[in-house]
Image (cartoon, rainbow, N blue to C red):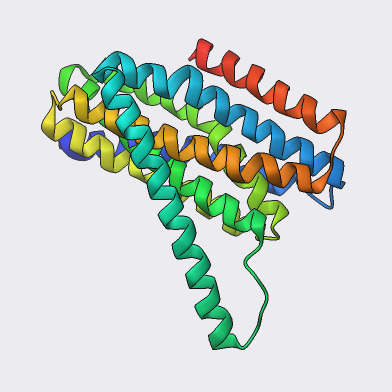
Length: 251
């Protein structure tokens, strides 16, 4: 099989299997309590905080330096703010066409924005896979396996708000699978470019980190507080951070 095609297939599989497995949690949520949903959202937020703070940003700093990482973070935050505004305007247009005033669910919007952030994160992961294959096939395969496991908690974090927002289970699964596709695109680019600029990769990582950090702090945690306030949701946040730390340290 053509090496370029092989690399693209493996990279795509790593992304969609990882986020898809995480998205499968949508099939497990059937009429849960508000307290449980709040704890789940906070757990997802904790996972994202750990992935960003203990994996994405340190890797961005290591690869391209502090300036590249921070530049990426700022650009990621700005991009999500713009996407948020586009979603709001899109919903208003749909409402006018349907002559309804029903707003887009806050949880659904959070899930969509988080999906955008995860898709952005998956592109530089794909770059790493492609670069690995260009150097040695066994290294590329190893990276693919690691990244597939790494994407599972991100799929969970994306699925939780979508399910709470009333999105159907099949749509959630398809959305989480779609968020993994950029891994394959990144793998193709990484293989073709081989020794791609470390500065560019660092900006991509920082970009994804900034996007997810903004969504977590502005969307996920406030949404969890709106659902329920108490010790259990707070423990969900702490548990999510600890779980994320364990995952990033193992893989």
